[in-house]
Image (cartoon, rainbow, N blue to C red; front, side, top):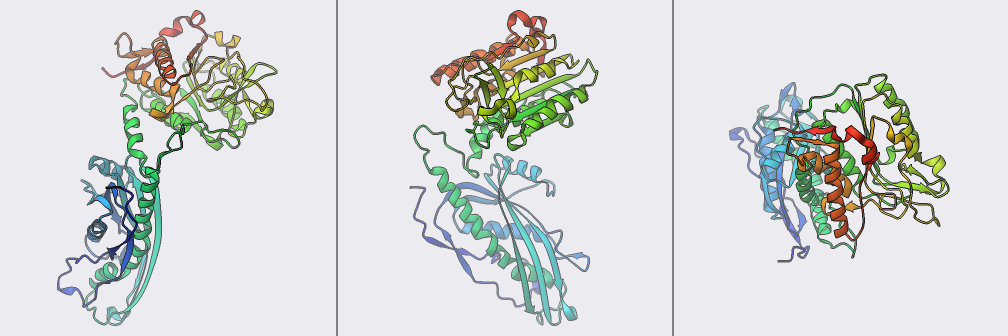
Length: 503
């Protein structure tokens, strides 16, 4: 069957038409019989109904209705299942009651859900004059959130309100307020939340079916692009290591994917975020000692502040300190001086001296640090020929020298993505930069050539170089990662372990 079936309206039963177990205290209240249309468009996704936080549904200091959250979950499940829009709708099973989104998402992944819907009663008030003898008035505000389970992203949310005033002469017991809330106050809230949620998911699904233009890389749907990314992220997950947390290890991680006026650098933000995870989970860096700059936060002034003020202040005179720099973004050559520049978010290739950050200046700053080990990893290039490099309009791509005499200092090692006349490419199949992907795979243990459960600088470089060159040739381009200073200058630093893996 064509998944893009005709969008004929299908009648969706009103939320909370399900009969609640309410014993004899239920007054003679007619459940709502309204319906609202749902487009006849199936979505092959499993929707989990997570917790509905009803802790604010309180009257005179007491919670209104036992297990109201569970009954609301069941009602949501049954009504959404009746639409036959989703492949499956199920109530999420939790071993412990929690409203922590990460724990709930973890449970949803275990139960093979694709989407997760959770809710919260944000505000609730009830005015019941004469002890349920006459008019009652209920106000409530409910917020619903929809998550992509595979990548944990919050993809949709909506808040709606209800204000109901009704004759309450048929209500003789306080517990009847539970029924009022479920049968009368919740349906109009649901009517404002459920239809747009279903329509949003259907629209996103149809968008995910569209083929990209020839030669273009398909952009992942916010809702339906997560499964593939989740598999990639799982394959690239930071390994367990024997490295304890280091109190004097400092890092600056930079990823610029979306520039103000320059072409996008595909996957640079994902690259930087994954590198940060490796630093924390595998390399012993404390999160509090890592500065992460992404997209519009990467200005020249921020680079100056972090490289030239923050790092020297943190390292001080500590010769046991470690420093790690990751840069993923555009580089640019200055045709007049043959110098390389890191291009910040608002950088201009025509005015590099005033808008970009000189690579030589970075090496100069790092070379002055007394830290015993300074590592720079750059997924960028400086030829101006494309990829992760840019050049002023009218200028020609050029061979640029990225080596510097300061590179011969005894504490500095640089792994860069490409030679001076090459471009640094993206790896669309893996949703990462080509160089960064294999740099991380090497840290996972793929670069452990002698199988001693450790990866040193030389092993990492040789692995990354071979893998990147091989895949680049398949993509009909040339890309050869560089180790700076060269192998003739690096000496014993080539045997320094970058990571120690668990046996």
